[in-house]
Image (cartoon, rainbow, N blue to C red; front, side, top):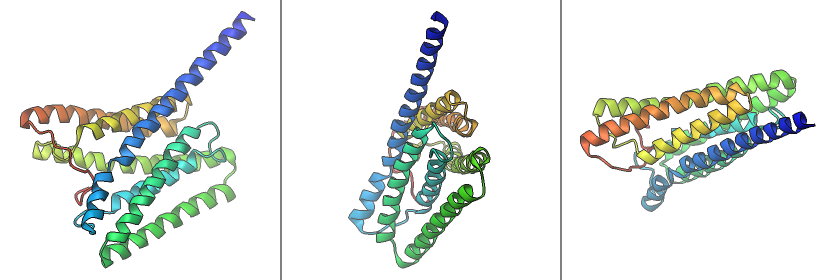
Length: 239
């Protein structure tokens, strides 16, 4: 009886730690989701997208849709916090894309509408094929590999920012709090993936955590040298 209660207590603690890691990941991700708001306030005030690029929001929407599908019970039971965070993320990206299209010039508008339709088509194809072609064991592998590929491709943006900081020796375009939120989100979901024994969650977020550490180290190195504390919106045309 004592042995059984001990195992139950251990399982309960393990489950609690897993949930805490997932909730923290959701909270940190929310900070990242709201970070473009100043950019879109500027777009709405000026009634123009100016030199801002809409591509980061298109990429982010596709990433969120693939990852939320991976987190659904029909694909991966027991990781609902992956579904929740990416559902919220997809909602934010959808709003950003709608605003961008509304204020873009005709050329950008048509390009964004085409890319938006392509994203919805790709996601529909992934969802349909994963249900119709694959059974539950291989379905998770199929969508899991796609989610890892999508997440790792999203790391192209942090790599670009890291390269920009090193090249310019300036942290002007790498706000500290966003770098910190990125690191905390990645480390939280890395822990969540480890608790859930899910490499499709832990591996890409482990890579994200390493990139987050690099960004924080670079920030402290170059902000001290240049004395910069600028907090510009991230997703401009260089993104």
